[in-house]
Every structure is written in structure tokens, then in C-alpha cells.
Length: 154
Length: 419
Image 1 (cartoon, each protein chain N blue to C red):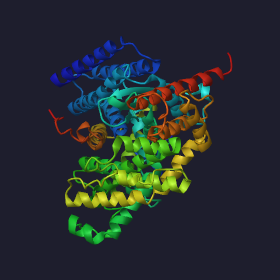
Image 2 (image 1 turned 180 degrees about the vertical axis):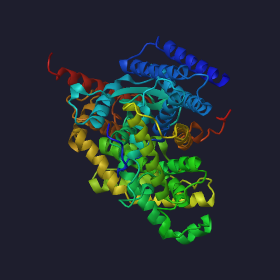
Image 3 (image 1 turned 180 degrees about the horizontal axis):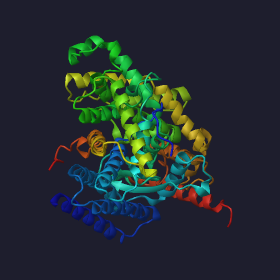
Image 4 (image 1 turned 30 degrees about the vertical axis):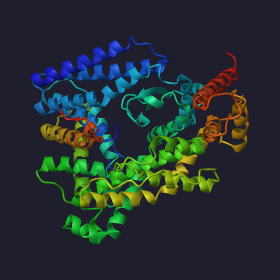
């Protein structure tokens, strides 16, 4: 497969879909770390989804206009990985592109039975962070207007 | 691990419940097919959990359990919906006309014999027509629910046009296309209201950096989310009107006028929705009650903090800038579906049949039947010369409409090529 690259696409994110795909990727990486047999279909899908949402720096409209929700999710995940929240949208874009490159390199290395170099635990943590933050940004049943006579929360 | 065991057991209970519901009597196959899809979804999730090992990273395990928990909250209401779709309270005569309409608008480019959109119709204990849509793992299913006391009332069928709008919105991915436009509008409005924004949010950045500063994005993204939701609801109103004409206006006011007091942030104010519909009706030359907007009260502002109120105002303004675009998309969706427009001539012909208390033959569109029905319903003198007690006329009219929908469906089946 051709390595996924950042490209300009105006795709809205379904944060719940992103959460699910990111979790699948994290699970596959976890299996890889523990030397368990695994496919990397989830990681490939996740990398492609990220690519479709990241604008090439200096290109058209910033990612914040195209998909502000995903921009925030990725910003928080990037912040978790680096220890500090990025201040600028472009920082999120650049950092995400680097993660995409790591995923591409890993997929290629596994497919060609080469030595694996990307730090897998860090990559797993990033995927997991995207899943957690995307889940947090998804609509919840608690977001529905409360019935005046009912309390939804346990 | 206890967390994994709890989650696994919850999934097993869910699957058992779905299997139990499979023993119900279903009036049409789509409900059972939806249950089968849901069972597969939960069995897949159960298999995912069983594939985890004691050595799996704890964070990964927890997120799997979180995902499963989300599935329970998301899909239990749908399972209940499927169960209620078997209730005899539903007017099953409405099913096939709505199914055909759904297939036409959702799959306009697919030959009728190859369309796969499936419909579930249910009576619901929620006082608002509703739809479940964009359902992961239930692609191609449209869930339409009507409030239980009105689930047998065909005069409210036009409201299904609004609910179908949500499916069209998703299928055509209007959110993707409109998010950049709405986001830009939001940024423009915030820029125009910068003095107020500075007071409320004390930004450490200039207004020129609204698009690129992450703190700024986190703030105005809320307005974008609300605006997208409002835009979707507005589109759905327009689609309902484009499909059903004046009968949509009447059904809308019957169910929702005057007001609930305040409005949810994801919806335009009711009166605003009415005004937009009337403006479009006038533009298209569609007859409508002169006092229509006056049926609706003024939605008071919901209880929000000043920053939230500011963002709601921004969202409202952003949506107002794309009303014409939403109308255009609604009209295109109906045109693409090949659904004929309602006509005054056909309405008049159907009305003449109704006066004789018989269904009309060879109806062109469901909208003509509903427009005639509403015209009869609102005419206090309709059937006044008959011996029918006044208190029974509405019930007889509704039965006549249901019968007309049946006749239309029979004629459609008879016109199919023999094979």
C-alpha cells in the first residue's frame, strides 16, 4: 500500500467512528508489543482517516475551519503525547503528520518483514489518546434534555 | 479482571435479549433484519473482548469496555424501537408509501428494484416525531417514530419528510460540505462582535488569530457544532415542505405550536422555523394560512451563561446566512428523487373524491392526498350536509386517507411488470 500522506480533504469527522478506529489501531499495536499475531488493518485505516483530515501546511484553509472537532481531538491527543497542549492549529497538523509517518513506516516494516523501529508504546498511547478524546467529544445520552421528572444519571 | 468480566456479562445479556425479541411477530421483514444486524454488532464486540488477554495494556482494555458501554447506551433505545415497531398501534398503511419515499430520496440513482433502504416505523413514547439515523452498523436503515397517541394519524405523515431529511443529510454528507462554510461564518461573526467576545472570553490572542489559535478554536467550535445541528434541522424542515407542501406546514403546527417555552441550542427557535417555511412557501407560491406564524409563540432564551448565549447568537447568525443554500439542497434532493410536485389540480380532484367519501384513484403523489386531507380537515363545513356526526368526521377522514394510501399502493403493485 502507498504510504498515507497528508492531503487537503474537507471531511467531517464522526468522532465516534474515529474513536473506534483509533481503538482498533491501539489494540493491534498492543498485540504487536506483546509479540502476538495481529493484522494492521486497523492501523492502516486509522492512518488513512487521519490523512484525510489533516491539511498540508501552507495549503488551503486551516484544519480548524474544515473540521474543528477533529482538530480539537487531535490537539488533545498530541498534547497528551508531548506533555503540553499545542497552541496553534498548525502545530497540531505538523505533529499529526509525524504520527502518520510513523504509522506508515511501521506498516511498511511489518509488511516487508523488516526490523521495527518506531517506538510502539508511544504510538499505542497516541492512538489510545485519540480514541479517548474522540469518545469524550461524542454526543452522550446525558446530553439530551432531561425530562423534568426523570434523572438519567445513575 | 473484574471490569472485563462485567462488560462481557453485560454483552451476553444484551445478546440474549436480542435473541428473545427475535421471537416477536414482525409485520414486515425490516425490523427482524435490523435485530439481526444488531446481534452481529454485539457478538463482534464480545469477540473483541474475548480476544484480549490478561497481558493486554490496561488502557486498551478500559477503552474497549468504554466503547462497549457506549454501545449499550446507544443501542438499547433502538432495540426498544424495533420491539415497538410490532405494535398494532402503528398505522401500517403508512409503511409502504413512506418506504418508497425513503428509497427515492436516499437512493435516487439506484433503479427501484435494486434499492436497499429499509424502514422501521414505530409508535414512540416521546412527544415528537423522531428518527434514528447515521446508525453505525445499521447503514441503510431508516427508523421513523411517531408519538404514540398520533401514530395512527395519517395527517401527521408529512412530518416524516422532516425525519427523512436527517437520512438525506447523512447520505449526502452535507455536514462535510457545509462545515467549512459554517465555520467561516462563525469566525466572521465572532470577528464582527469582537468587542463583546473580548469582554466574555478575555482572549490572549488577536481576532486575526481566531482560525489558528487552539484556545480560540476550542471556544468557537461550540458555536459551529450548534450551527451545524440547527442547519440540519432547517434543511429537514425544507425537505419536509418540498416533499409535502402545505400539508407539512399544517402537520408541523398541529404537533408543535405554540412553543415549549425555550428552545434547545441545536434547533432554531420554533417561530424562526415557521418564518423560514412561510417565506419559502410565499416565494414558491404555495397556499398557506395567513396567520401561520402567529400560531407560534416566542421561544425564550434557554438558561445559559453569558458566554454560551454569545455563542448561541453566533450560531443563529451563521445559520441565517445559509438558509438559501439549504433550500436549494432540499429542492435538489426532491428533484433528484424524481418525486413529482404536489399540484392544486390533483389536490382538488382528490378532495372531490373525499367529498363522496371514497378514496381517489390514480393519485400522483402522497402529498396530493395529504394536502386534500388537510384541506378537508380544516374546513368546518366539510361533510356538513352528510349525516355523519360532527364528532366523528375527523376519524372517518383519517380512515379515508389510510384507505387512499392503500389504494395508491395497490395500484403501484398492479403497475409493476409481471415476472
